[in-house]
Length: 189
Image: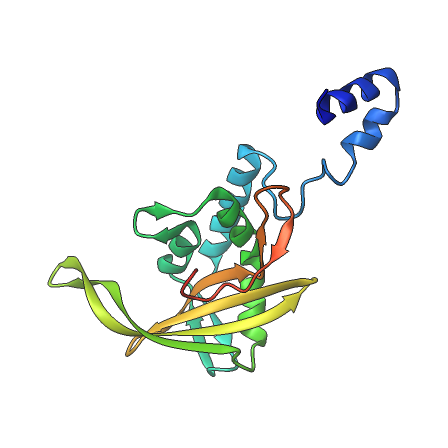
């Protein structure tokens, strides 16, 4: 007999134990676990509405404003062009989005910097094309409400600095849906 069958029989035989089983840690969903499709859509809509209210935020480290453009929001939902992130990944990032302005506004030190050459989509002569550009990604790490968060700010050399991503310092274990810490680099993002 499977464990779930034993649990069902125990719940049926003993009234009142259903509440204990329903509220057990194994049944609870964490702050960053998707409950259902409706929950995901609600978090996504809230995050998109919040993002629309942001245009730029002053960063004391750079002594200038960081833009919040469509590229940042798109990156939270898509890993690359035409490749969507898994819903669990999107959900965690969209839930963390509300902390991003606070992290940027209070960042006075830089935790990481990465200089690369990447293909970036750029409009040239009325058409979109991929052009190899020098790109700098700046990393700010903060702990807010017991959450360790990494915020990435991106700059194509010669252009403005803009919000690129927010990365939780954990992943969701696929077996038991619990948080596990990891150290994702900006390349793996």
